[in-house]
Image 1 (spheres, one colour):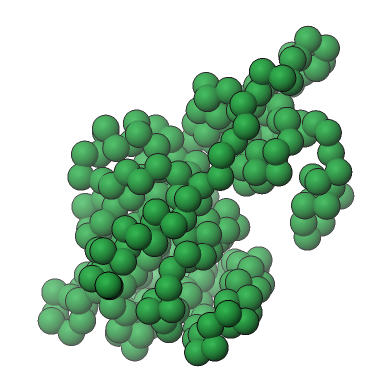
Image 2 (cartoon, rainbow over the protein chains, first blue to last red):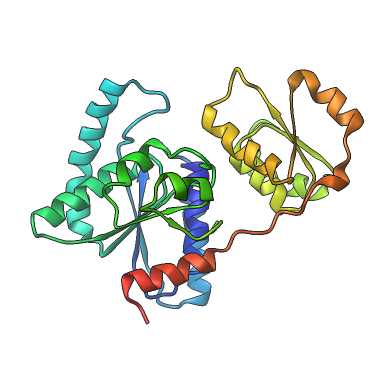
Length: 169
Length: 104
């Protein structure tokens, strides 16, 4: 969604072409991100001739301020939906930065790893908006990711297992 | 103005921006190098939106007020006290990721 997409595209901006093909996963209700992603990839294709990417959508796990109990149900539904998608894509690396969409994808990846089907490295970058507290996705994925990156020192102190590189978006 | 695709044009022409505390608005404005006054509406606010605005204010990058003190802020503000906002460094992320993944 919106701000998350802008941030993640900035994170991708300096990555080499070794990070290819790129598979973007969006919430079905997200109307604006697709255009931003296509524009980013189009520019990239101007520099790197073999640039490849795909785009998929999954049901949104949770609306803002949705109640806890219904969130569990919708998230479970999103996980069931993203499991076959993640299995199909078999990513080596998952990069995410906070929207509810990333939780079902990461959980699917963890399940695939546990089943011995594919082990992905999960890298989570908390949004720059999070200065003192983690987002809900962050709180969940802090324990499930291989690398958890924060952009402000207060978070590094609260979450010592995290990585602090300063502001990266 | 309701849903313009991008405010980038308007932003470039502005001398001063008065905005809510949304992260996108704040960061876009600061990156254009425009002075920014952030107006907090405590009733509408998501607590976490305040975090970034507060930090930016602490670091001297924005001025900060609420709806009722806006006029007073505009009258007494000294924009020269605002510090420039250095850009983020995605290169650092790329370097980190290359190591983590085992490239190079």
